Image (cartoon, rainbow, N blue to C red; front, side):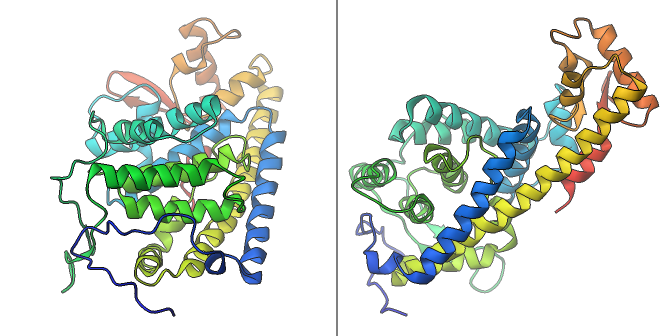
Length: 372
């Protein structure tokens, strides 16, 4: 391991080095092998997702899993049931934790639309993500905000400062401008997109530009980078579940980059996260696709008047309200209710009373999504 970098964890790290790291820190034969494996797994995921007739079945369900996992990293917990019920249109009495998860999901979608339309990262995009996640109107943290990163847990070292990010709006803006240039300029910074993903994720966390919500904002930026670099067409790969399962290693390696500039270990961790998550997501999509095909086949035999488009609707999220089925093929609430009741009789849907309304649960889909 290289010698420690001289910095005081209790003082703002205004000397945080600009990007890129030295090539010798990020380029090696082992690194390139990991890059190739991760890119191969991503390509398989992207290719299979393209074949599906309705990608919204994946995007809606899988993005909510990411929102839930990403907020759990910040010790914000909620249940699948509560979230899916809220998405069915019934958010009466929704708890604050669930609201935070849904705001994360909204921020993800807003960022996805922005990167699709504009094609570039900028400070405004990052600030808008933060504002959506935290439901606030401020931006880059002001110099009087003495933000520090403290050790998690309740042991002897719990609550001790492990890192103090740069302080001062001009300093933070300089670091962000450099990060944005690194993300956007593929000629000046000619690195594999997945190396950029790992390096930029660390750098954003180290800059820590906002009062709160930096972790969640940074994880969305990683998703958007995969979209911008055309590694994926739609946001269906999320790293938060992997980070939760390997949380101690995640924070240890982040700290090692700061203290020792140990880039290779950190980048290898992120490459493994991409590869394993892509494989997991591909398997999950296969399961969703098989379940959908079996359900559609049953409907075709038993209830042939229910079209495929309606079957797709009950796979966009586990809980469905009659209103969610309305469209060109179903124009009245009564017809929607009738079809859902018929699907209940076949064991496809399960009715559940929420407040004064009855919503319908695709229990097999919920169980599938709840599996780790």
